[in-house]
Length: 238
Image (cartoon, rainbow, N blue to C red):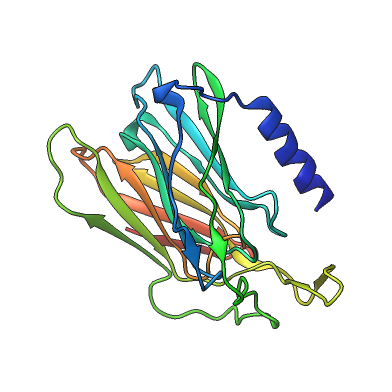
């Protein structure tokens, strides 16, 4: 937890406030109130060029008030066509999320969400280790809508996997480990034989998360997903 706090404090210090800079302003879409803290929908985007010489190369979503501060990191490329990330996260208390977008030319930029008020149900952390045995499709990709020439298309990436830190809070508010962490830790997206996006995941996300990105379509070749969990198991889908 101390190293987490130091990392995010430095990340915030290194990021600039856009102050009216439209291209580097992060726009959040979050609910004002949620009853289920185990599944809080969040999306963020920037109206920024995604060209070979000028693009948003990463989005970091985090909450400094959470036990698991990091929610997700999306490493993007011009092939995404738009800087966008949508998913569902865990929150145990009311908060304002933060995100840092990194432009390949102009550095890091900070965004802060409107407040999300969380009900009493908590973040839904497990009290025992989930089974490591799987069946069915662990990864699934789906295109949303029909592609239009020259415009990016939204893709949905379903990860059917527990996202558990193994940490629980005791009555004194201290974190204790109940079981080893077990979650999908990374997800790679390949299109036309090229790595176009890479996602760093963790137990700050909801169980069985769905992540949405944009993709500039029109290339020859399949769309493939590759992922690895904390037990070293690998998964693929196309």
